[in-house]
Length: 415
Image (tube, rainbow, N blue to C red; front, side):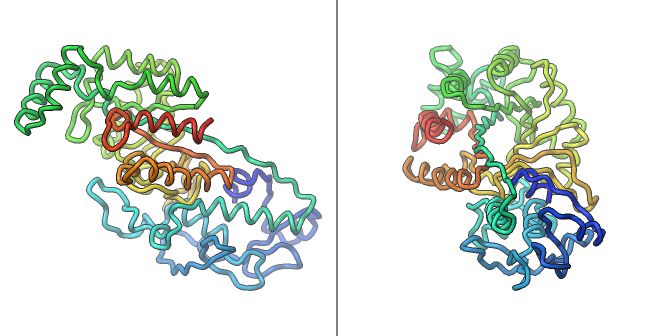
């Protein structure tokens, strides 16, 4: 209820379970229970929010003026479904507690989601429900003032690998050159040699271009650097490399720098804390924000670890290979830990589009058509439009010149 009233609608509310206090209140009031007391605004409750733990829930999708909804309530309720229980179901990622087949990297697949199954993944339904609730409340209580939220924009740059060929040391560069030759990747061999001999800039080293784009258009960019030891899934250059450290410091002079936690740290809490501390020592300022490698989240353990490691904000809520709103919202929210029945002090910022989800589209026209659709949904509810691009993809020219496309996207949506 705080998420819907305070953070989405920016309405201050109070709560009571005492009937006499409720009846005495002369201002706008809502009953959330099985049946109304008088003639007040009434939302019939579903059992979900009055339970503890996780249980299988029967869900039937219906429409509320062309917006999908579930947990229907019946005619007496002023809202045709339990908006609070349905919002909680999506925001808490309730469905991820049920047994499911994870993908190669241990992630919850988007095809397993209720939103994908019923074709509302591309819509921030919780925000849409809140907006429709606001209209009903203002019709019932004409004196109720509801501030208009400002649309917010954040461009996230993920940096799992800062350089493709440069600063990798003699041994790793030699092995890489041998593998490219063995695989007959002669163009890549030429690129590698030119970068190593400093005849060409490393393709992943586009940081000055990105900073200039952000500075030119006044866009709040955020860079998440991986600062971890080499492993099977973590292949960045050495954290002891002075060029790498200087790069991070120089980026931090212009944009916020945070941690892209390594794949290895997912099951190693001490390693996660070490990565946070080491990056903090490089930029000489607190590192409170985090992104998880491959957007890999295990509900609820991942967020418990982030809280214990003293992270305050997470930018991993979304699908890597599918656009849309994983938690049904484009508004930041706090994670609710159902087994512990507490709201954890970690704020989740859901993103609408990851660049790798755009790779499957055939042309720039299709890419912008998809982004237009998502941006329009966010703008309609005055939400927070977050996109995630990696310096890796921005350094390639497959199908599209991705850096040019990124610059056009900034002008199109962020300016």
